[in-house]
Amino acid sequence: MNSHFSFDQRLIDRYDRPGPRYTSYPTAVQFRDDFTVDDYRAAAGRSRALSLYFHIPFCDTICFYCACNKIATKDRSKSEPYLQALDREMALQAAIFNQGQPVEQLHWGGGTPTFLNNDQMRWLMARTRSHYNLLDDDSGEYSIEIDPREVRPDTLEVLREIGFNRMSLGLQDLDEAVQRAVNRIQSAEQTFGTMQRARELGFRSVSLDLIYGLPKQTLASFERTLEAVIAERPDRLSIFNYAHMPERFKPQRRIEAADLPAPQTKLDILQMAGEKLQEAGYVYIGMDHFALPDDELALAQREGHLYRNFQGYSTHAHCDLLGFGVSAIGSVGNTYAQNVKDLASYYAAIERGELPIERGLVLSRDDEIRRGLITELICNFRLDFAEFGRQWEIDTPDYFAEELKRLESMQADGLVVLDGEGIRVTDSGRLLIRNICMVFDAYLDQAKARFSRVI
Figure 1 (cartoon, rainbow, N blue to C red):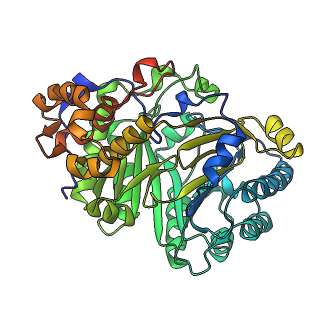
Figure 2 (tube, rainbow, N blue to C red):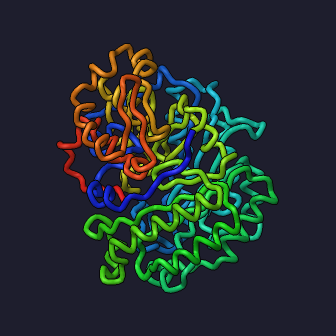
């Protein structure tokens, strides 16, 4: 499978508009308040292998660009009651699932998971093991998000000891002016030293996150950051577009709009980054993600079974995802379920002995079919009509007749190739995959939320 994209300024100018990132379909804006625990329980009764996500919301300091659900605090004692609540939530969820199902995937996100001290991290993993069937042979995909500034001398040793074998490191940018502007001072030594130690300890994959479009960024400054990163050869790289939405995310109000790079500078940065990474041998996975050719994501994409969920690209399409903690989202069978978003409501629900689900969705058959199609396009850049039709027992071209007609203009622009056998996304279309998926989104015209721009 071709693993490149091409940068076409003309097409980007034409198609750059707001749109969903499709970590789910339907997207979270379609979740309903009348979704009930009974809906979730019914889906849980048909559960498969499991993927567990734990949201640890605490951060020592606030990064001004952040759009995550987080609680900035210097008070480390706040983590103890939260851990106790997580334990009780695990028990509540375990009671409605087949506890023999293996946990093939596990992820701690945040916030800053290493806000927890070593004993607390050991305790949380031990309690997880008491409720669920964690794998003991290091074959699971057990990952954690790391802020290198929160890595203590023995943090990585403890994480490896309790079962983590993959990590994602937040860097964003190495330039000092950019770091000051976003309130995240982080040295190259902290970041790359953490990467090196992780490899020495046998972590199988190290991913690194960068953001383009931050205040004070220039093409030259980001190129210096990228060259330093490429020299360290992370297994995966995510290069996210900063979406400035201060009306939605309060910390972003600390960023001066005048300090943001011009739109054309952002495009120049994106083009430069894509070219440099591909020259360095990285495979373009899609949606801001790159990986080395032997990485599991690249292999899964070549074999045609890459998947996408709320944590991004994944190789575990067959797993049900259980979310724990404030704002966490689960995906079980034909349902999505999201927990309450504030700590007080979360603690109150747990104290009542109730799952802290605030809203969710039971997918219709049409939702599931469209989810399957969007997943195939956004992960594997192609759709085989006959194969998809057999899977869903439909005549694919007939079912999507209106959408395929709308896709013809994208074919004329060179984003896709349409024929009797299926859809193939071209190199020029890969950067605009969100636009292509939006053609098949039945809810897009109803969405009231403000999405980030596709580029």
